[in-house]
Image 1 (cartoon, rainbow, N blue to C red):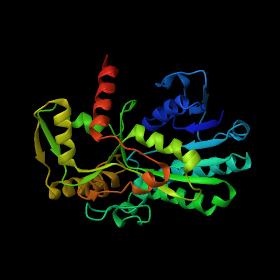
Image 2 (cartoon, one colour):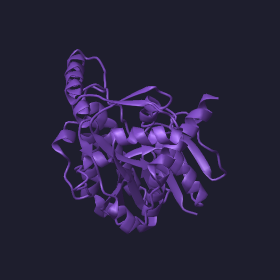
Image 3 (cartoon, one colour):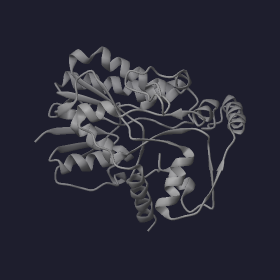
Length: 322
């Protein structure tokens, strides 16, 4: 039985990944700050370990075959790059080097599609696309790319796989995180949407791709885990359809979003935390589209319609309210 250590097990991806690994017969050790905060399913082959990312895991990793590092800070309101770098890059380096010293066989780093260059419907972004200038201004994406570069520079020391999921949706979004976009439109009479678009993917499909990467992934490679490229308008049209609601869709003008972005920059200069920065507003106005060809070819990935992810998210949110 292979032993897997997962960070970020309380998150949308981490919880679903834990379930799928257990279903596949793996023994899972999950890092949590507090065991009582774990919202996933319990299992005889699941061990929860309380701790922080900067703890010394050298003894624990001695018995681990695969490390899947999914923990990250995605908060868009932080004011300094070092706040992202410390968790997304520095903590990754420490865990990676501990895994090397502990003779872990494979290290899988969950990054983001935003470290790669997005494309249009006519020419989708791929693993070979360089980060777009717009995302170079994103502290989150920049910190994840710095971590990627460090891992690839040291890939000769341990089998290293990088996965780059797009915008994930599904159940167990306990915060919620990405599921906020569903809550923006679910049961709303009016839905205001930005002019851009992005790639959406079911979190369970991301999980299965990561599990396939344990055996099929090639060390030193990146894999985009992506599915449907939709404009925000198209996304909310799908939401309307699967929920049988008749919300009116209203487009937010790009000019208004840019003004909001400048207002956010003013607040940030006053040291007020906000996610209304200019970069974030500009991102909402672009078509952030990607290809999943490599993951299908090399990881045998399959992808469900995003409507299924929306339904699973809504069902989870409905249960959570009870």
